[in-house]
Amino acid sequence: MGDSVSYETAEFYPPSEDTDLLIDALRADLARLRATCRARPVGASVIVELGSGSGAVLHALACTQRTCGAPPDECRARLLDDELTQCRPLFFATDVNSAAMAKLREMQCRCQLTDVELVQADLLEFWAAPQSAVASAGAGSASCVSLERHVQLDVLVFNPPYVATDQQEFAHALEQRDIYASWAGGENGAQVILRFVQQIANVMADGGLVYLLMLDVNRPLQIAELMKANGFQGECIETRTTGIERLSVWRFTYSSVESNASHSTREILRSR
Image (cartoon, rainbow, N blue to C red; front, side, top):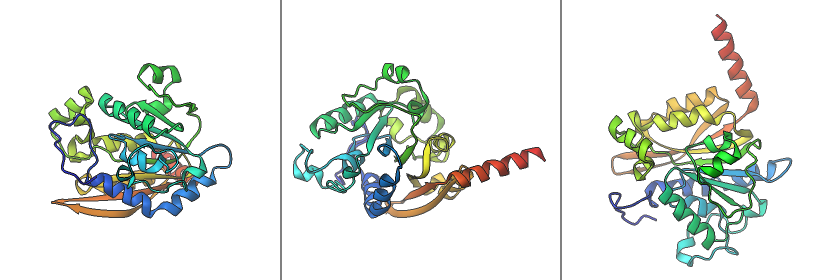
């Protein structure tokens, strides 16, 4: 996955160093992932990856030795063999880029990922939208997974567009939803991350885990404070320097008790 790639000719974000970092962080946090998946009291656990791109992270989470039809060298990133999938989670993978969705569908078919739902959508809009609206937007999945979005998420993984760009490039990404959308983050590279933070609080199960990759320019400590205000306790669990960039993966754990306390505090402050 560390092969050199041309972003000028690619149609979607290819596996890169940040992909490797995110997979390594998930691998290191495996025991916690398994415990979270097994903790759901009723029904299957739900794992969502936003901005799946090439599907490398999804492949690592969802693909097993039994189902994978890819050559062994393509499976070197597989995290658990059958360990996580024995918990029988349901997987959702999203991207705004239609070329990425085509690649994800190809991988889904090759690896026989019958418990994966592919949805072309922007961030978590699909979780709040009516099912008919999602279908018309191009869900296009052969999966039998039901989009019962009243169910809360147990695990969410997001490698966002984190590169600081001017507003023209950011506007292009929003309008065209092409490969630019995989990196163009606008001011401080954080505009998409900030939208994500606004959406996340109402969708996670108690004890749910969010894995978010950030660049130093995104101001991770400030993002962590915003997440804390929504009931998430954050911790940086993995870092890597690539060239002049320092990437980090943060794990945020949701607590409904913390969330309620934060909401109560905000209400008190408003009333003064």
